[in-house]
Amino acid sequence: MPLRHRARLLAAPALLVVVALASGCGPSSSDPTGSAPASSAAPSSTPSSTPSSTPSSTPSSTPSPSTSTASPSRPAGRSGPGTPLRDRLLTASRMPGFDAARRWREAGTGPERPSSSFGTCQRFGIVSIGAERAVVRRFSPVARDAPHDRAGELVAEFPDPLTARRAYAVLEAWRARCADRLKGRTGADVGPLQPVAAGDRAGWYLLRYGPVPGDPDARFLDAQGMVLAGRRVAMVALVHAGDDPHDRPGHEPVAVALRRAAATLR
Image (cartoon, rainbow, N blue to C red; front, side):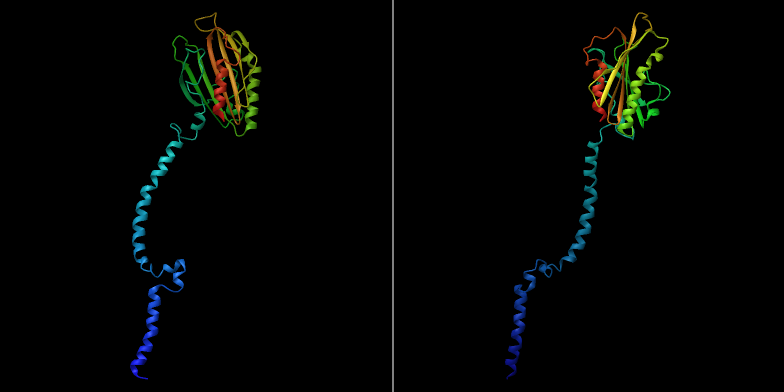
């Protein structure tokens, strides 16, 4: 066979191979990863773009979402392990006055001091009967014509509801033995325990005793209340120098305070 015919026969198969590769036929056209040959040049550009774009944008954008979401979830004034319990105390605007015209101002807030009892009938610090911690807030009257009036609240947290229930029973027992705490007072009287529909259990009682400085004919009206809710207990005290109240049952200032306190204990 002439040499030029052999050259044509050899060139024909080579031409078919070139046409097949150019037209995209073969396994790469049906396989999703078949684009690898076409993107084989991508690694030369991908490494150069990825380090320069991703690290530079991520640090600058990440802190802003975390900062914006963290600040609304922490109310102002909550800073430290003891502040959540402090936030459960009633504010001056939430502590009822002895009448609509009477208002309170905060006189101080802090941990319970074992050396000074909160309640008139209290015999031991609340921590000594099982509380893990306790905070007290005291109030003084805004009006200057009631220098002997005062109010306060104690909130205590216990390790579990059972311990809290036992401590609440101790508070009730203190009322039953309160007469000896009023020795030396004139006209001392310990009133019965009045139940209040609040929390898991709540009640209050009224102490009457004198004398009132500057007014020997007047007596102190000392309302002592307590409320149990879960593993927390609140004690409320409202003391007024004057005449006996004439509030409707269940609407006494101390009963209103106990219902408001119960709402903050859960």
